[in-house]
Image (cartoon, rainbow, N blue to C red; front, side, top):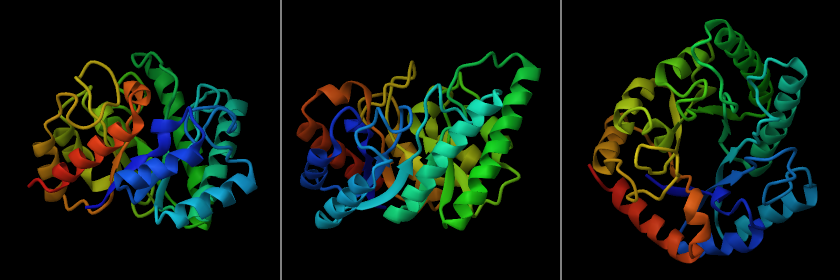
Length: 279
């Protein structure tokens, strides 16, 4: 199993100096963070700027780094579950830009958040409306993605968001073809509900890719593996038992952003190397 890391660790910085840091730490696989922000304005690269994209493509090629996936843009203003049809349509349109990014960078997967805003999950009628909007959005995005030969991976969000629980996420995507749409298992989000290896067992038929991070089970702190309470030996064995052959893609955010980046990356790569060798 190969090891990768999301550039989201440096979402607050210019991406270009960071690519050297990934290469020095030994990473050959990355996920580009188009992530949190509105219309590309608050990310560490402007995905609307063709010259910037060409420069990134050249930079990763020079460093022999593979872009495996793209984390689609999301924010409270870019939420595919929005019951406001205009807001939903805007979010879908923006995510379709990320589909084109995947094709441009030859990235296999586009990671999508099914919901962004917290909502009263006890309000059955409202939840049903939101689920209907998510499915409508996913159908629209997937139609576009299939034209560009891009696979969609829906990430399990934190439990206070719609789709955070395994059964809910499986229900949302069940009618979509599994060869084109699956799940990005976020270990940190899963750990707020149950042990990630147990969560994996519930979604393994649709598992497509990973967002690996650790926490202490209290909130999604996106710590490096080993800095929280996840049993990585169990999780590693579960991955291998389910024949997962994708990239062990880490998504480290939070406090790690303020530590020495070279040290964070070196330790993360070392720890990930140990985990993927576990049985």
